[in-house]
Length: 280
Ligand code: NAP
Image (cartoon, rainbow, N blue to C red):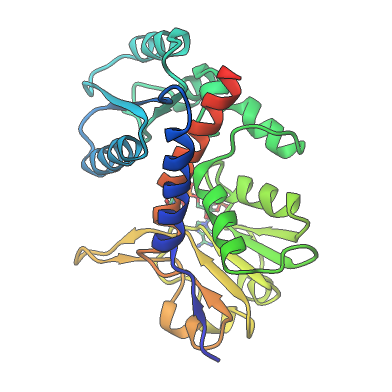
């Protein structure tokens, strides 16, 4: 079997064009503010990419760079200022934060209607209870990819490897909302390979390079690799042993060029949705 390669770059480019066209038809520019605390180099790259992508689709985007010594109170004051600013539709505080700042307090301080990361407990609760709200960008991007690949979702056996608040848990909720039969597996699961082999749709979000081997994946399954692992030699590698799995699965995302490009595209989609919801 030759696996279909799910091209995240192409799906993301189409989504971004669609967002740019919708933005051009508005009488205003959706406002996005990305807050960065400290000098973490990886965060710097992510923040620059988000800002550039937002400007490309016509948003009013700006980055607020604060020193690594910023106190929790000072960051909360900045978030409160952005919450109150009518020109701001979306607020994203780039993680990780320096150790003196409690991320959960900052996440809970962002106004839920401006929470374009979808991490606020109110938005997490809305997702868990099947109500509309802002949804975390990476799992939202995975749903776009599954639909673009033509995956038959209702009734499908989906296995999510990982249960973080950023990827695994919201991923499971979105698959459930799409009528999949969902299993979540994690570090305390007894027989990971056996659980994964049952999947018609397998989403790996574990942060361990090439952990999912060829014999963990059923013939014909659709495999989405969320993992981004940087090896000592600088190469990026997913959570899935690509060559082994692609030899017999039905469809698979590459790393890079799979889920990664979708995360930023979905941040733009969330910002546009937040702007439309706030401004009627
Ligand atoms: P995380 O918070 O570290 O969560 C990892 C999850 O994997 C946890 O639920 C953990 O289980 C589970 N796990 C870890 N080791 C395991 C093992 N040996 N066996 C079984 N389960 C294990 O990571 P995350 O934020 O969800 O990110 C996961 C991966 O996705 C990372 O590589 C990250 O870089 C990548 N990522 C990519 C994007 C993107 O845009 N493409 C966005 C976000 C994250 P326990 O809960 O039991 O500890």
